[in-house]
Length: 341
Image (cartoon, rainbow, N blue to C red; front, side):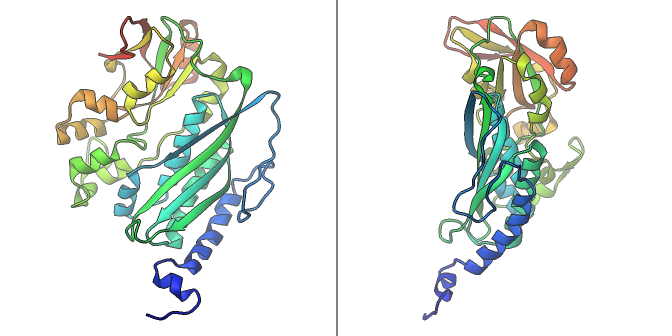
């Protein structure tokens, strides 16, 4: 097959004109997030951010993706929430160190580049960035036929924030009898979707996504696409009273709380102290999944764990009306770092 100019690339599965159109659609969303520190427009080879306002600044960075939640978005052809998921996940991660988000970059790879789909994804990224004052200063869109199927895509984010060195939260001050507060999640957030897809056999037959569940007051698909909750705005004003933060993502409570605990201490969690959303009970029943695995895969209704001294519990629960006391720090002679009973 003969081709001329850009036609050859198009015949190979990469549409440069579609990529150019997508970039133009993206610009308007990205510009809506710009802060005064942003020195470059979208399109330069690098995004520039003038860093100022700190005396002993420590940069805090993180990268993450939405995982196979994008498969649910594709099956429902609804793409404006996964960008929110992406930003909120990354913001929560650096918040766990006490950092304020400064700027964000995204990476979207697709089997077939569809400008309107790209715009829908980025509109969610920009919306979440605006809500926390974080600038979307750049990104990349890649059309990769042969690596991804036509309707498949992957979504990854990169965030940089800052914290004064003296205000870093790293768990070093956590001590015996400190209290663990739990802030509710909005659902699965961005973890456990491979197990969910297998449990409901969604890839072979997406019809279960349209089933309405009265206990959730929505369809399974709508429940699974609920955005990952961001905790930045409610926690930022009270960070000085907090000793440790654990963002409950992949690995659940059992995998994330131990990451911030000093040697010799374990988290004793009372699972009867908070309401477990119906979606988790549905998944467990449908998949006949052991409870221990549920707590290791899913957040089980707790999206952020907050560790504080007993004397700060009243002030924190006043500031965080949804927070529940879910446990405390105990001594442990064993390697076990978390006990859920």
